[in-house]
Length: 475
Image (tube, rainbow, N blue to C red; front, side):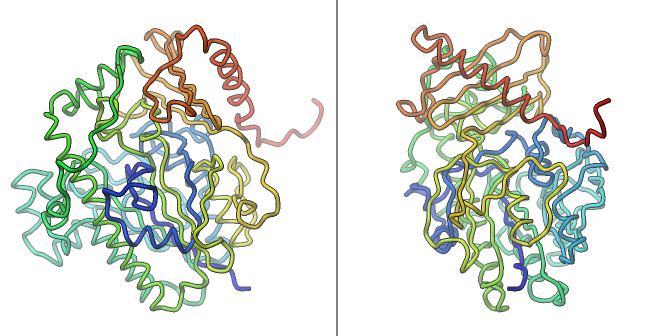
């Protein structure tokens, strides 16, 4: 059998439940729902960080945050790191990317530096807002709709979120992906193409035609909990998002929060339409049967839950758990659902195994193939996520580490000497409290469970250290 093509479709900031097929009857995602019926959906996929750059570095390297070194947004990837796309390119794959990448600092229009990533096609645009000589979306917009970009920027940077679909960033990602599939790929090789959408990242805005599909008042209200029972940083985040850089949940009325949710859902629906176009082009080119399609997202979004917006040190499922759908006709079962705990670092080994390529030398993820081949899957039984003052910078720094098992979640909010903040934490019984409302960190009846999980976390951190450097001899 010929080696499969690989199409990795990734959104930015899409929580695990922002899909119709995930049991959300309020959101319209027919194309992604259909993709799930044609493949396997993983209900418990966790990212290794709750903000973009650290999470994306884990995807590309298959390594945990404390090993790949991109501990925060604004940190450049070490040139010594190896991406799975470089491995695929060395094995004869034609590799390309469109959209956001975020493996280096891009603030203020800086062009994100590249390492030896293996991409022949690289259509980079960090976001739709910031002018940059490297922003390929802006170049496309100027060519295709002269004057529209300048007009939108003059009205305010978030006006660009509300551009009509045909001029929208998400449409541009769809256009570039379809162009690769139909005309610019090297047809003598299998391909690996990454389509990185920016939506449903904030700002919370969508084309009016998409926003009009949603009645904000009919959408369910956010999950609430008593923030006084949780670490104090959450009360701060409720008042001010991004360490004070953006308005907090408390700045909005209940009606405005519902409008934010409606815009968020509208953004997801726009992406869904573009995914539909991409998958149609794949089929029209006769590539559907021999292409592994993966749909996922780099992290979630609080969306008003627990009186917070956006992301940061929060390790609630809405922030750290993401969609994952895998379709590969004849290999991955149709319409299957897997509930095992899997991590974002597992994707690179899975893709390399499908391509018949030896894995990354320092990869820490696991090939997911046994979950659909029946060859025997030994569940690790836990997932790990880390935040090291990784988003907007708090002073004193905020460092949190999450360990989740089948039924429990522990989040340690680190104190001295890691930070001048007081040590605190969270403990949730996910069987009785799936929405993570009741923090058992200080509950006397849960102290044995807390101590057990704190010990387990210490062991997991030791187990996930990078010991890939070979030991030559006894001394």
